[in-house]
Length: 69
Length: 246
Image 1 (cartoon, each protein chain N blue to C red):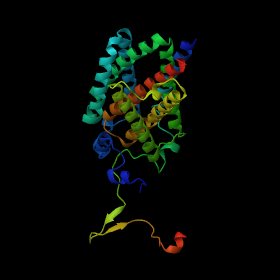
Image 2 (tube, rainbow over the protein chains, first blue to last red; image 1 turned 180 degrees about the horizontal axis):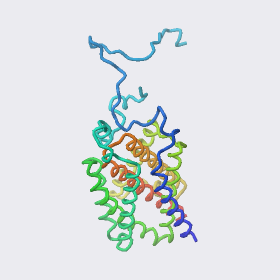
Image 3 (cartoon, each protein chain N blue to C red; image 1 turned 90 degrees about the vertical axis):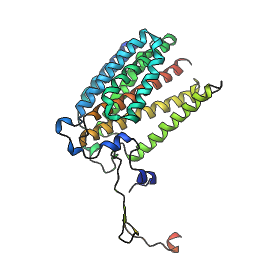
Image 4 (cartoon, rainbow over the protein chains, first blue to last red; image 1 turned 120 degrees about the vertical axis):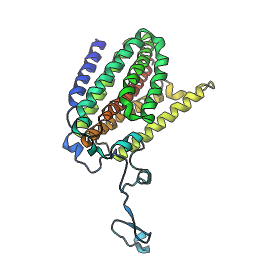
């Protein structure tokens, strides 16, 4: 009985894999900003200025002693 | 920008196959591009070859050890030497790895009858359910997810390596192989990590098809899925053996 149940589970799962695997993933999965970039290369956010100094993109924030407290 | 400085320095993927082939995909014609259909069909071919190998290993268990050694060498060749040749190495990998699995399963079946079909059913059950979770967006693989899985997988690999080396000197890390609560808990953890690696394989295949990678990457995607499935099957078999031996 055990063998039949697990055998059916295996065949059914393979059938699901063969059919579902060929369907594109849902928009919920695909339209995300935090998807894995398998390409490997990332555009660095640090740009080189003409004089060799580095400019870091993003909003500037003033840090003083009072904010630390 | 990523919070992980290593990613910013070295890029997103450490796998040379991925970094090499995701650029300039426009150069390939439509028929030379990777598709979901192709990747799934190639996975089916590799599974069929694995079953054929397992049939041979089941009937001639002596083939298990050579199958394991040759299969492992072929896996390393495919990953590190030339992923573009995955179409010629992956089928042999599947067949040899199948021989090893057939032999291992015979050994397990002699001790615990019926354990093989349970492990096969559970492996494919996990494959189908995780595929559903991935396709429907229930599980969303992110960069942090990948880093976590990579760390856990490397940790497990190192632990097994240390245990393997220690076994030459007559000792070992006993608790990970024991059938006590800790041993079973460890096996459950490893099965979980192996299963979640399937999600990464699905994501790689999905993105590869979306970006139109070259056709041979279908073989590479199918191969990576096979590697994870083989690992998952072995770990489920180990877990079931621990449970049955109590």
